[in-house]
Length: 477
Image (tube, rainbow, N blue to C red; front, side):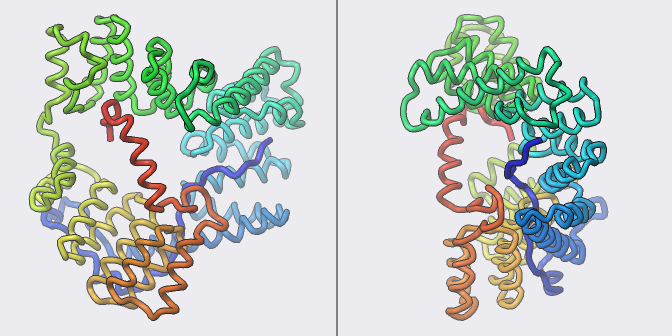
């Protein structure tokens, strides 16, 4: 069994007062009986629930870190009952259950973490341990294969873990250990790849590791992009095909397969992959400017597909995205209201609408959208920070400070944004401002990768800059 510190996606916490009720107004188009309704008490309850879960998780982690496994087991059990979607808590609970000799109880938690969590390789490895300890070799080996396929590469642990003792006579076990060992070697050899232009050896290592970590769709996407960018079109095609099989950004994967095939002169194969991308709903306005597809330009089939890729085809979502991108609030409101009649609330659209409304000095309407985003699954710290901003713009200093503390407790880490909000709205005295800004700067002492500067502007800009390199092949939402 293995325990690392997996990326958590759990909620952070804060305090919300009853004054939030006054903030929750909705946009035009949300007023008829069939449209989504915001309930202030539901938003308050949600914030309070996230606060309680976050504080409980902090306490559970403290017990775990001090070696009090019984106490940690009890607290993580309570946390999973309160917040069943918390895949990190489920992973911790499962680890503790295995250690307590309750492997059968650990299985459903690990299966959930494997399906929904960030650390799927770790979840699959621990699932293999739980199955092996129960004397179930076939599901254990299957889980171990999955672990390696998702990037688990601690071969030394795999070879010596007593939890896997019952699998060591299985013929495939030694092969899996060898694959994990090789995956680890390749990963270490690739550690310096981002520092400069990759060498031929590094590109070969990248292609080989992608052939081992087959279920990590993002890794396949990133590897495919690097390979195609450096002329390894066949290897890039294989990576993008694995990306499609993994279920990660599938339409995007087929589009990239088309690019690779076109670059290799496989016109029919490229057309087939492009047709699949269109069938899956991909939209790419700049498709005709894509140099990778130049060899297809004289093909009538390409012209038809390019028209479909470039067309807005009346998509309300696409039109709304364009309106948001252009900063056209009036058009965005109209399209957003229309979309609300047929679609479930979309947290991304709600946040973007909220930001536009706040910039237009309509903080009450903005608050309604931030609350909707929160209730629809947007990161709690970010949504609550903007709720605090909307409250401050309305002059409710007490509520704004309460909500700001909520967002910070839940992990908000953009110290510059916190400082700007405090100063621009004349919130708090000097000591309060210093305390809150310092809190944001030092965020994540017991948190995860998302909380440690998860919303730091520099980190966000770096991520955005990196993503722009994939823009022409990554037009999926």
